[in-house]
Amino acid sequence: MKILFIGGTGTISMAISKLLLSEGHTLYLLNRGNHNSGLSGDIVEIRVDIKDEDAVRAAIGDLKFDVVADFIAFSPVELERDYRLFGGRTKQFIYISSASAYQKPLAHYYINESTPLANPYWEYSRNKIAGEEYLMKLYREEGFPITIVRPSHTYDERSVPLGMHGENGSYSVIKRMLEGKKVIIHGDGTSLWTLTHNSDFAKGFAGLVGNIHAIGEAVQITSDESVTWNQIYQMIADAIGVELNAIHVASEFLDACGPYDFAGSLLGDKANTVVFDNSKLKRLVPGFTAKIRADQGIRDTVAYVLSHPECQREDPDFDKWCDKVINGVETMTKTIRES
Image (cartoon, rainbow, N blue to C red; front, side, top):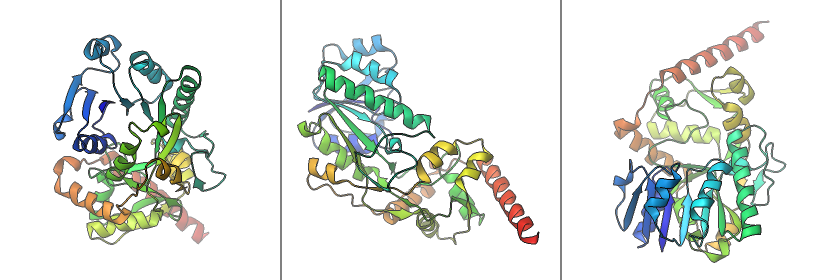
């Protein structure tokens, strides 16, 4: 198949690109070319900025595709642009939405594609919802062949999956563990969460590519495994080889402390217990199974980060913020106990 990816080299999309190339597909990568070197196979690079519609039209000429997937669209405005560019040019358009779009607070922890979409806490999620609604309208009224994919917490070897971190990724928390400092776990750490390795996600996604039964459908792709945040942080500490020194802090308090957007990423996402029902995906992609357990993926990711200096980006501002929050919580707790 002739497949066009807008983006194609991110956390989710890199694994998909590698898998589809290994299966012999021709992959057109429409991006700036900054990270394409990690790929090999039948690749056609289209090095333009997707925001420059005239440049994109000139670059793609009269090409048509079996599949177009946009990995970097975050709002309906960007999807409107995609429709102008690729309407009539593809047999399937895949939009990467987000499982964070599901209603918060949840009416029930067990989630499938029929769970209502509503997230008052996070603009990111509301934009994803609006994007889904725009595409479904195009499908109903214009026959635009869309497939909506909803990932949850998907990670790769470059970033350890965490409940919260600063602007520079996961290493700041790993560094605190290595130094014996306390790390913050939101809430009491007992809510259930689902981590999906990008190589597992890629298998589900690849099964939807060119799949006529996926047209007009929204499909979530996650692991079937559920673990608590306490277990996740313990897995990280075990992989590093240190004792876990954790402090639990209410998600509402963390959001109130600012400056980080924990209203969205915690109250609107990770602070909620979620268990995903992937039966729809398994009907569409027979044989799909996520094979990498959370402890296995975390162990491999920690090893990669600790052996690759480019992944070890320190974040002194976040580190100071953690110390400030922890000191505040411990002082308040001591005052209450002594009163």
